[in-house]
Image 1 (cartoon, one colour):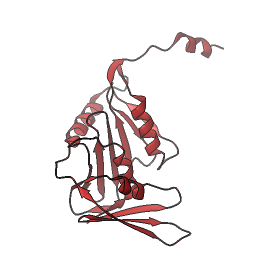
Image 2 (tube, one colour; image 1 turned 180 degrees about the vertical axis):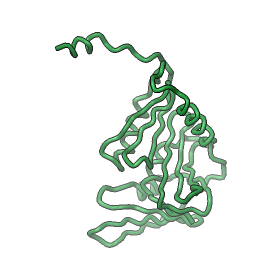
Image 3 (tube, helix red, strand yellow; image 1 turned 90 degrees about the vertical axis):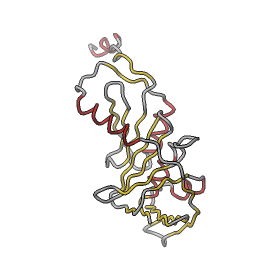
Image 4 (cartoon, rainbow, N blue to C red; image 1 turned 45 degrees about the vertical axis):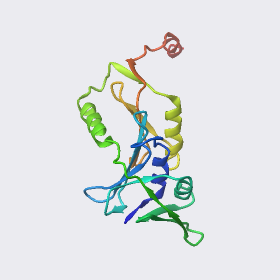
Length: 204
């Protein structure tokens, strides 16, 4: 049985790839309680989420369908929770003004092991912990991926933070830090010089 914030599943579903092993969303119990939700599309972008109030007694990979994404999508007027048991999912919408609404849907699970995303994240964390604050390079990032990340995060927060390290992934996250999107750089380039006109403007 899996039980967690359905909006995180909906967001993670936006960042899957078309082919195995990237076409599924991984749901994993966290060692100290809660649930990890992860997805990636083969190296361009990755979504990582943590629901501290969620629960899971298994690790699984869900193949997101249009109906599941639609039913799971977060809303600003209430909360949504998903329970997955076997091949069935129940999405419950909790609103203050109306009775709880339940939607029951079939669930498709992937038989292909999830991409080794955790190992890549560990490599990023190792690099970030040893990288000086002032970096010699900056990443160039695809706007399509950045726009997609910002649009997805807007479900949870009205403002976001962006940080990048040494030409590596651009980390985009909201205030509660439970949902993070990593946009991988297309290239690592020297940090651009400050444009001359900006210095001139500052002297006005």
